Structures are given as C-alpha cells and as structure tokens.
Length: 318
Length: 256
Image 1: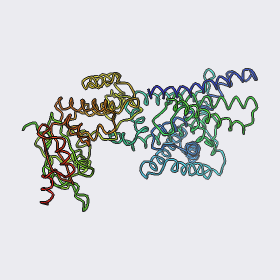
Image 2: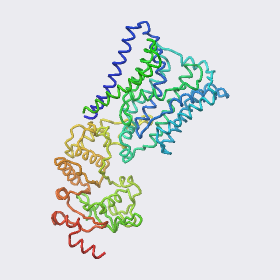
Image 3: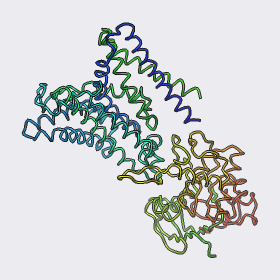
C-alpha cells in the first residue's frame, strides 16, 4: 500500500510536471507560435544537457540518504572545465582534454566523499564549504577571464545537432540516465542505495558497505559535474569560471521536482529527467514571452513549493 | 545429548567495575525453544550480545557443536549460523519482502562486473519460505512498509532462515503486537523449532513463554538463577524466580 501510494505521489508530481509542460507549450503556441519548432527543441535540450548531468549526480547523492546533498556541483563544473583548459594551455595534448575534465570532476567528487564518509562532516556543511572552495578557485585561477582554445574537433561534437537534437544530449545525457536507471532498478547496488537511503542502521546491520557506496556516489556526482563541464567547453568553445553558477540550486530543484525524497530512499531518475526538461522549457518559454528574468527565478521557486505541497498532500491522505 | 547446538561455559562479561554476567552455564539445543527470562538489567540482553558476537566475553568459553569459537563481530556469529532478530527489526520499509529477505546477499548474475538481480528466483524462494512458515503473506513483492508488526517478524524470520541460520535469537518479538499477531508470531517460533532450528526467545510475557518454550532459564543480577522445563514448573514459580521471592533465589543470593 505504501509503495502504491509512493508511486502515486510520484506520478502525481510527474503528472503536475507534464501538465505544466503542456501548459507552457500551449501558452507559447497561442502567444508566440513562431517560437515553437526545431530551433526551440535544440536550444531546450542543449541547456538541459548540462543541468541533467548535474541533477543526476545530485539525485544519486540525495537518494543514498544520510542527509546527503551536494551543494558543490556548480563549483565542480566550473573548476573542472577551468582546470582542463589550464592544463591544455600548459602543454597537455588536446586529445586528453576530455579525460582531464572528467578526471578533475572525479577528484573533486572524491574529496567531497572523503569529507562526508571519513571525516564525518555533515554533507550540507561539507559541500557548502567545497562549493566556495571550488567556485572561488575557478575564479582565482583565471582572474575571472574565460579560457579560450577548445580544439575544433570538440566543438563539432559539442555543437553538433542530429535531427534537431544536440549531439552531447544523445551521447552523454541519454546514456548516463539509462545506465543510472538500470543500475538503480535492476542491480543489487541499486537495492543497497535505496536500503541505505531509507534506513542506514538496518543497511549496516545486513552488511551493506554503506560508507564505500556513499563515497562512490559523491565521486560519481563529481564525475558527472566534470562531464557537464566538458559539455560546456565543447558547446561554448571556452572555459568560463562562472559556468556552473546556480547549478547547485537548479539541480536540487530538478531532483525535488522529479520526486527524489530529500530524506533519501525515494524516487527515480526518470522523474528527474522530466523535471529538468520541464524547468528548461519553462525558462525558455518565459524568455520567448519576454518575461523578466527576475520573474523566471521566482516562478521556478513557486513551482517547486507547489509540487512539494502536492506531494505532501498525497502522502498525508493515506 | 547430541543435539546440543551451543554450550556456554562460565561466560562472564564485565564492563569496567560492573559485572553484567557472571559464570553463565547454558546449553542451547536444536529443535527446542529456550526462553530467557529476567527483570530489566538481569543480563539477558548482554548474554545475547555475547552469543551473537556483539560483545566478546570477558571470561568463559562458547562451544558450537562441541568446537570452541570466538566471535569478534556479529558477522562471525552469522557465519556460524547464529541469526539475531532485534527489537528494532533491520528491515527497509521502502523495499519489497523478497528484497528485504535477500538484502546484502542478493542472488545475482554478474555481467561485466555488474550484479544484476535474479528477481524471479528470489521471489520464488521467498514465496516458498513464507508458505512453509504459513505466514499469511500472499505476495512476496509487497513492500515491507505495508505489513503489520507480526508480518514483519515473519519477514525477519524468513531472512534468518534464508541465511541458513541454525540458531535464531528473538529479542522481545511480541512486545509491540496485538493479540492475534502475537499468536501468529508464537506459531512461527514453534515452527522454526520444528524445522530443527535452535530458538532463543527473550520475553517479559510469561503467558507467551509458557505457550511456546520447552525450557526456561531465569536470569537475575547477572547470574543464571534457575532452569526449568515447562511441564515441571508454573507461571507463579517463574515469577517468583524473576522477582527474587523464590526460596532458591534467596538462598543463592545469601550465599554470595
């Protein structure tokens, strides 16, 4: 019954998301039909690519419980992109650029995992600290200047479009979401993540390697931030020290909207994916309708509160 | 007797200056339900923790099937076939029954190092166990969060059986249950023993104990003060032993 209700509440928030999405599209179709089309699809998915990657890492960390949260994702995106570009400038062969970017992200994630699982610092505080460290370091290393010089072959990947769908979306976002869904749904590891997210004590009693799993998930969140940094490089053609700005809060919003329970052990990655697309569509749609950016932020915030209230309402009506 | 599963000899446990257990001699037999009785702080839980590997004994030996063993962790005890069902059941409410029974020891097919779950097989094994225990649960895929307290006990027992436990220790299994549920759990306890498991039951409820236990051991102030077979004693005598009003206990306490 609980599971049924849980799925219900999850599908309720998903349903709200889909309805809102249709509403936004319908609003656009009436008010500005010219804006709808392949170009809009491309631009929505292009922005979605980066947010989706980061939101996936965020969701995995939250799902595993233990008050898990990764506020440093935005900083990790900026810093991994900057580190990779600086290494390129220092003479690293350009072939290694993707590996440098992902490797930097992975190391940053491992550092978070170390703080949380070994030093036992509360994740909110540990990743708040590393958020400032990572984003501050990205600015300090560059003096705030964008780092140009991304090789041409990467640009053709990052800017490539296949039937109106950006290539990075097809080659990075879709595969990692499918992979995450399979691991969560069909493997023993997935069961362990849900079990430890819901009841850490019992997970430890049955012998699940809780700390190691959590360490790996923080590292994965960092790695995904590195991939997002890579996508930003290949798309924009330069490493910007502030590219990850606001990603921590947006990824958190996407995870919550997508039905990930903030206390862990609840939710799936499909909802997160839908939430990312909705958020970006909404923002793009509002932009097309010339709604002030200030209002856009407020609307996203209000949306989050409404969806969580609906979720709460259905939880209480058991 | 050759169905002795676990024999404790002179088991003593000290925490600093406090002696929580002193010189406990106890035999746990396969196919038998043994009840541990005693007031709060009498040493029942400490004894259980020693047997289940959570605390190493300060003194004394534990033999399993005649072989001396020393447990450094609950995992050692589990490997020796001892399963403890704690009051706060180690179940994950967001997972299904079969997922809980196999949690941490899933049946998997490893493809490229990734352990894919063999769901059907796990489901069938659990359905079989539930059926065998006559546990009144029809769907092994139901989430544990939807189960009653007694059904959760059944799931925990299934988990113990699935780990091939030969000694199942149950700590207050009926403490929070309604009457009908209590009946059910006591029935499960009985069936466990009939399957050849050794069962240790800790309970405060004398009538429950008289319903299922073959033998009763009373602890008082860290000592074993009495051991009785069910058909040779009465609830009144057991209560007198627990509270210390019984002449035997008085004599023992005077002597020390």
